[in-house]
Length: 188
Image (cartoon, rainbow, N blue to C red; front, side):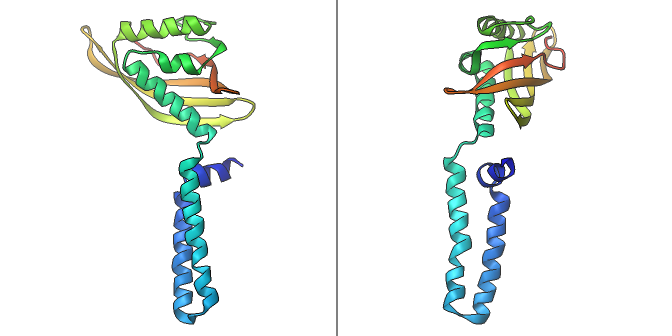
């Protein structure tokens, strides 16, 4: 099911390329035969390509929803805000930031830790460079971010961090239920 979802809604370019090849083959056959049936067949790949193109724009998959939420969090933290994080953190979340903010944090404590980190490390930009989602009972998201930090001590520095988050689908959408500590030291 994930292959179909990814092929039709998230990355339809391969399917669209196949429809283009089918259209070219059918056009060549029609050119040789010039029959009404072959002419009607020319409509099928074009109609399928149009349908998949429209659906890929209209349908937002679970993977795309989680990706958009991660990008919103990164943009908000880059701007010194925690709005995106407050929205997607589940009320029952248990967050483990290790030495960067504590172990077993609830939602409110995590928001406070994030606000403190943004001001303490003077985060200028957070870019998501790698993103992978595995779906099961929960979605497990591995993502790598590159944070651009600025401080008088070290100047401007780019720090890559790898995060593992677990998400659960709630009626209001996907929510983070746990975050594991990042795999690289943070801070100047």
